[in-house]
Length: 300
Image (cartoon, rainbow, N blue to C red; front, side, top):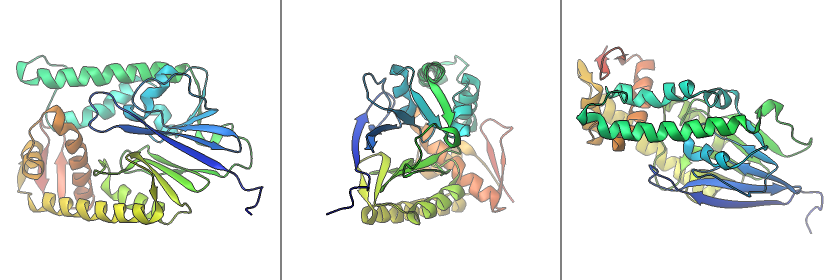
């Protein structure tokens, strides 16, 4: 017989989908000591979801849009996540970076950029709704989250996919958001930080991993996943380095590495390419000239 004082953790994974997602986004309902947590909130407005607390791993809309259907709830997140979702200007500063790298101005109305403008306007509308929803709920930073004492819950910074990213451990489960997207490679705005995050995750105390996309994984399968992802990402980083010239435009490099031109389909690969370039810049291999449109990569 198990110790009756041990918490009983029940985890339900649910999926949500909304344009322009290519795969469903997860959100989790976790019950422990009869307290219910919503880990992320998915890509669609949620209604009638029983949860005492909503915990957010990061600011991306496919993990936060669910709160647009919720009011007067307790929402806890990192200071960086809360700051980003406090104004549309803060969100747009982050959303625009991959577009700026590609030399795309979504505020222009040229025919060639009309598709990107439509994509940008849809995203902007979603984030405006999320910001309004944050103001309609009680929002706390993780260290001030009004949780009952004694809960086996831990919040830890896990940057990589985004700079504000957090991992949330509850009992034997760790929820890592988009630092793991089972079935595909997660985007990484900071690849060096991502490597450190993976090591911290694998060295942590947990038995089951909840990814931002895809099914729950036990420790053995999660270890295989991260091993494969790091191998693939290192291979891609080497390809980026090998494709460098004395000067190379971001778009030329985007095509060399991903065979993509500036389109909505290139937005996510462009984010990851920025992460690789920042790693190379930190290593002293290149300089990124972000004053030009598109960006120009200069080999040192």
